[in-house]
Amino acid sequence: MDTSFIIVIFLIGFIGSFISGMVGIGGSIIKYPMLLYIPSMLGIAAFTSHEVAGISAVQVVFATIAGVWAYKSSGYLNMRLILYMGSAILIGSLLGGYGSEFLTETQIDIIYAVLATIAVVMMFLPKKEVPFNPDDTLDFNGLLAAALAFITGAAAGIVGAAGAFILVPIMLVVLKIPTRVTIATSLAVTFISSIGTTIGKVVTDQVLYGPAAIMIVASLIAAPIGAKVGQKMNVKILQWILALLILGTSLKIWVEIFF
Image 1: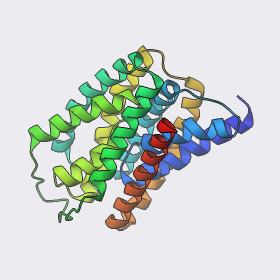
Image 2: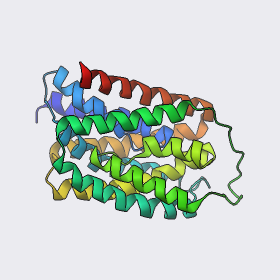
Image 3: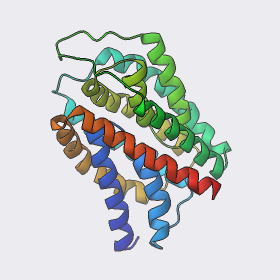
Image 4: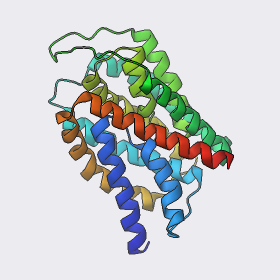
Protein backbone atom coordinates (compact mmCIF):
# COMPACT_ATOMS: atom_id res chain seq x y z
CA MET A 1 0.00 0.00 0.00
CA ASP A 2 1.45 3.37 -1.02
CA THR A 3 1.05 6.63 0.91
CA SER A 4 -1.70 8.09 -1.27
CA PHE A 5 -3.78 4.92 -0.86
CA ILE A 6 -3.42 5.03 2.95
CA ILE A 7 -4.30 8.76 3.11
CA VAL A 8 -7.43 8.41 0.93
CA ILE A 9 -8.75 5.37 2.84
CA PHE A 10 -8.00 7.04 6.18
CA LEU A 11 -9.85 10.23 5.18
CA ILE A 12 -12.86 8.23 4.00
CA GLY A 13 -12.89 6.40 7.33
CA PHE A 14 -12.39 9.60 9.34
CA ILE A 15 -15.13 11.62 7.63
CA GLY A 16 -17.62 8.75 7.69
CA SER A 17 -16.90 7.90 11.33
CA PHE A 18 -17.14 11.51 12.50
CA ILE A 19 -20.58 11.80 10.91
CA SER A 20 -21.60 8.37 12.20
CA GLY A 21 -20.76 9.31 15.77
CA MET A 22 -22.60 12.62 15.40
CA VAL A 23 -25.91 11.27 14.06
CA GLY A 24 -25.93 7.80 15.64
CA ILE A 25 -25.20 5.50 12.70
CA GLY A 26 -22.44 3.03 11.93
CA GLY A 27 -21.35 5.07 8.92
CA SER A 28 -21.76 2.51 6.12
CA ILE A 29 -24.44 4.67 4.49
CA ILE A 30 -21.67 7.22 3.90
CA LYS A 31 -18.57 5.05 3.54
CA TYR A 32 -20.08 2.47 1.17
CA PRO A 33 -20.39 4.87 -1.81
CA MET A 34 -17.17 6.69 -0.83
CA LEU A 35 -15.17 3.45 -0.89
CA LEU A 36 -16.91 2.27 -4.04
CA TYR A 37 -16.32 5.43 -6.09
CA ILE A 38 -13.55 7.70 -4.68
CA PRO A 39 -10.52 5.32 -4.86
CA SER A 40 -11.58 4.31 -8.36
CA MET A 41 -12.02 7.94 -9.50
CA LEU A 42 -8.55 8.79 -8.17
CA GLY A 43 -6.99 5.73 -9.84
CA ILE A 44 -5.80 4.37 -6.48
CA ALA A 45 -7.88 1.20 -6.23
CA ALA A 46 -11.06 -0.36 -7.60
CA PHE A 47 -12.99 -2.21 -4.91
CA THR A 48 -15.88 -4.51 -5.78
CA SER A 49 -19.22 -4.26 -3.96
CA HIS A 50 -18.35 -7.44 -2.03
CA GLU A 51 -14.99 -5.98 -0.94
CA VAL A 52 -16.53 -2.64 0.07
CA ALA A 53 -19.21 -4.46 2.08
CA GLY A 54 -16.53 -6.53 3.83
CA ILE A 55 -14.35 -3.52 4.68
CA SER A 56 -17.39 -1.58 5.90
CA ALA A 57 -18.56 -4.44 8.10
CA VAL A 58 -15.28 -4.66 10.03
CA GLN A 59 -14.91 -0.90 10.34
CA VAL A 60 -18.42 -0.39 11.72
CA VAL A 61 -17.60 -2.61 14.74
CA PHE A 62 -14.98 -0.12 15.90
CA ALA A 63 -16.82 3.06 14.85
CA THR A 64 -19.91 2.12 16.85
CA ILE A 65 -18.11 0.91 19.97
CA ALA A 66 -16.16 4.19 20.02
CA GLY A 67 -19.42 6.12 19.65
CA VAL A 68 -21.12 4.13 22.42
CA TRP A 69 -18.18 4.81 24.74
CA ALA A 70 -18.66 8.54 24.22
CA TYR A 71 -22.33 8.18 25.29
CA LYS A 72 -21.71 5.88 28.28
CA SER A 73 -22.41 8.54 30.90
CA SER A 74 -25.06 10.49 29.00
CA GLY A 75 -28.13 8.68 30.36
CA TYR A 76 -29.45 8.13 26.82
CA LEU A 77 -28.42 4.46 26.41
CA ASN A 78 -31.60 2.45 27.07
CA MET A 79 -30.63 -1.10 28.08
CA ARG A 80 -34.11 -2.61 27.60
CA LEU A 81 -34.33 -1.31 24.04
CA ILE A 82 -30.76 -2.50 23.36
CA LEU A 83 -31.68 -5.99 24.59
CA TYR A 84 -34.81 -6.31 22.43
CA MET A 85 -33.36 -4.87 19.24
CA GLY A 86 -29.76 -6.04 19.72
CA SER A 87 -30.56 -9.74 20.11
CA ALA A 88 -32.88 -9.73 17.07
CA ILE A 89 -30.57 -7.73 14.82
CA LEU A 90 -27.60 -9.98 15.69
CA ILE A 91 -29.42 -13.05 14.32
CA GLY A 92 -30.59 -11.17 11.24
CA SER A 93 -27.15 -9.72 10.46
CA LEU A 94 -25.48 -13.13 10.80
CA LEU A 95 -27.87 -14.56 8.21
CA GLY A 96 -27.52 -11.54 5.90
CA GLY A 97 -23.73 -11.38 6.16
CA TYR A 98 -23.35 -15.06 5.30
CA GLY A 99 -26.02 -15.06 2.57
CA SER A 100 -24.46 -12.11 0.72
CA GLU A 101 -21.84 -14.46 -0.75
CA PHE A 102 -24.50 -15.89 -3.03
CA LEU A 103 -25.59 -12.53 -4.51
CA THR A 104 -24.17 -10.63 -7.49
CA GLU A 105 -22.57 -7.16 -7.30
CA THR A 106 -25.64 -5.54 -8.87
CA GLN A 107 -28.01 -7.32 -6.49
CA ILE A 108 -26.04 -6.03 -3.48
CA ASP A 109 -26.13 -2.47 -4.86
CA ILE A 110 -29.89 -2.70 -5.48
CA ILE A 111 -30.54 -3.93 -1.93
CA TYR A 112 -28.41 -1.07 -0.61
CA ALA A 113 -30.28 1.49 -2.73
CA VAL A 114 -33.68 0.13 -1.66
CA LEU A 115 -32.70 0.32 2.02
CA ALA A 116 -31.44 3.89 1.60
CA THR A 117 -34.63 4.91 -0.24
CA ILE A 118 -36.85 3.49 2.52
CA ALA A 119 -34.75 5.32 5.10
CA VAL A 120 -35.06 8.60 3.15
CA VAL A 121 -38.85 8.35 2.96
CA MET A 122 -39.08 7.62 6.69
CA MET A 123 -36.71 10.45 7.63
CA PHE A 124 -38.84 13.00 5.73
CA LEU A 125 -42.14 11.82 7.24
CA PRO A 126 -43.48 14.35 9.75
CA LYS A 127 -42.50 13.40 13.28
CA LYS A 128 -43.15 14.96 16.65
CA GLU A 129 -40.23 15.10 19.05
CA VAL A 130 -40.96 13.04 22.17
CA PRO A 131 -39.88 14.82 25.37
CA PHE A 132 -37.57 12.69 27.50
CA ASN A 133 -35.61 12.93 30.72
CA PRO A 134 -32.82 10.38 31.31
CA ASP A 135 -34.54 9.42 34.58
CA ASP A 136 -37.84 8.59 32.81
CA THR A 137 -38.99 5.07 31.89
CA LEU A 138 -39.08 4.56 28.11
CA ASP A 139 -42.26 2.92 26.77
CA PHE A 140 -42.17 0.99 23.47
CA ASN A 141 -43.53 -2.18 21.81
CA GLY A 142 -40.77 -4.75 22.44
CA LEU A 143 -42.08 -7.37 19.99
CA LEU A 144 -42.39 -4.83 17.17
CA ALA A 145 -38.92 -3.45 17.97
CA ALA A 146 -37.40 -6.95 17.80
CA ALA A 147 -39.20 -7.87 14.54
CA LEU A 148 -38.12 -4.67 12.78
CA ALA A 149 -34.55 -5.09 14.05
CA PHE A 150 -34.37 -8.67 12.69
CA ILE A 151 -35.55 -7.62 9.22
CA THR A 152 -33.19 -4.65 9.20
CA GLY A 153 -30.25 -6.80 10.31
CA ALA A 154 -30.82 -9.39 7.58
CA ALA A 155 -31.00 -6.78 4.82
CA ALA A 156 -28.17 -4.62 6.14
CA GLY A 157 -25.91 -7.63 6.71
CA ILE A 158 -25.96 -8.27 2.97
CA VAL A 159 -24.40 -4.88 2.17
CA GLY A 160 -21.91 -4.90 5.06
CA ALA A 161 -23.82 -2.25 6.99
CA ALA A 162 -25.03 -2.59 10.56
CA GLY A 163 -28.37 -1.05 9.61
CA ALA A 164 -28.37 2.10 11.74
CA PHE A 165 -29.23 4.30 8.76
CA ILE A 166 -32.62 2.56 8.64
CA LEU A 167 -32.83 1.73 12.36
CA VAL A 168 -32.72 5.43 13.24
CA PRO A 169 -35.82 6.41 11.19
CA ILE A 170 -37.60 3.24 12.40
CA MET A 171 -36.91 4.19 16.02
CA LEU A 172 -37.94 7.81 15.45
CA VAL A 173 -41.03 7.30 13.28
CA VAL A 174 -42.42 3.83 14.14
CA LEU A 175 -41.33 3.25 17.75
CA LYS A 176 -41.56 6.97 18.72
CA ILE A 177 -38.22 6.96 20.55
CA PRO A 178 -36.83 10.42 21.53
CA THR A 179 -34.07 11.64 19.21
CA ARG A 180 -31.16 11.66 21.66
CA VAL A 181 -32.10 8.20 23.01
CA THR A 182 -32.35 7.00 19.40
CA ILE A 183 -28.89 8.33 18.50
CA ALA A 184 -27.16 6.81 21.55
CA THR A 185 -29.06 3.51 21.65
CA SER A 186 -28.87 2.93 17.89
CA LEU A 187 -25.06 3.03 18.15
CA ALA A 188 -25.18 0.21 20.72
CA VAL A 189 -27.64 -1.85 18.65
CA THR A 190 -25.55 -1.19 15.55
CA PHE A 191 -22.43 -2.44 17.35
CA ILE A 192 -24.20 -5.73 18.11
CA SER A 193 -25.43 -5.97 14.52
CA SER A 194 -21.95 -5.29 13.14
CA ILE A 195 -20.57 -8.29 15.04
CA GLY A 196 -22.96 -10.62 13.20
CA THR A 197 -22.33 -8.95 9.85
CA THR A 198 -18.55 -9.12 10.29
CA ILE A 199 -18.59 -12.80 11.25
CA GLY A 200 -20.60 -13.54 8.10
CA LYS A 201 -18.18 -11.57 5.92
CA VAL A 202 -15.03 -13.09 7.49
CA VAL A 203 -16.33 -16.66 7.24
CA THR A 204 -17.08 -16.17 3.54
CA ASP A 205 -13.69 -14.44 2.91
CA GLN A 206 -15.10 -11.06 1.81
CA VAL A 207 -12.78 -8.84 3.89
CA LEU A 208 -9.65 -6.97 2.72
CA TYR A 209 -7.78 -6.58 6.00
CA GLY A 210 -5.31 -3.84 4.96
CA PRO A 211 -7.92 -1.19 4.05
CA ALA A 212 -10.10 -2.39 6.95
CA ALA A 213 -7.25 -1.75 9.42
CA ILE A 214 -6.78 1.81 8.12
CA MET A 215 -10.53 2.46 8.45
CA ILE A 216 -10.50 1.09 12.01
CA VAL A 217 -7.77 3.53 13.10
CA ALA A 218 -9.73 6.41 11.55
CA SER A 219 -12.92 5.25 13.29
CA LEU A 220 -11.37 5.08 16.75
CA ILE A 221 -10.19 8.69 16.38
CA ALA A 222 -13.19 10.26 14.64
CA ALA A 223 -16.30 8.53 16.07
CA PRO A 224 -15.91 9.78 19.69
CA ILE A 225 -15.28 13.33 18.41
CA GLY A 226 -18.44 13.16 16.31
CA ALA A 227 -20.45 11.81 19.27
CA LYS A 228 -19.33 14.68 21.50
CA VAL A 229 -20.26 17.23 18.82
CA GLY A 230 -23.64 15.54 18.30
CA GLN A 231 -24.53 15.78 22.00
CA LYS A 232 -24.28 19.58 21.75
CA MET A 233 -26.19 20.06 18.49
CA ASN A 234 -29.89 20.79 18.00
CA VAL A 235 -31.81 17.54 17.37
CA LYS A 236 -33.57 18.96 14.29
CA ILE A 237 -30.21 19.76 12.71
CA LEU A 238 -29.02 16.20 13.41
CA GLN A 239 -32.16 14.75 11.77
CA TRP A 240 -31.71 16.91 8.66
CA ILE A 241 -28.03 16.05 8.33
CA LEU A 242 -28.85 12.34 8.43
CA ALA A 243 -31.80 12.68 6.03
CA LEU A 244 -29.77 14.61 3.43
CA LEU A 245 -26.84 12.18 3.64
CA ILE A 246 -29.12 9.21 3.07
CA LEU A 247 -30.93 11.00 0.22
CA GLY A 248 -27.67 11.81 -1.57
CA THR A 249 -26.38 8.27 -1.22
CA SER A 250 -29.66 6.77 -2.42
CA LEU A 251 -29.74 8.95 -5.55
CA LYS A 252 -26.09 8.20 -6.36
CA ILE A 253 -26.56 4.43 -6.14
CA TRP A 254 -29.76 4.46 -8.25
CA VAL A 255 -28.06 6.57 -10.94
CA GLU A 256 -25.15 4.08 -11.06
CA ILE A 257 -27.53 1.11 -11.30
CA PHE A 258 -29.63 2.50 -14.16
CA PHE A 259 -27.08 4.56 -16.12
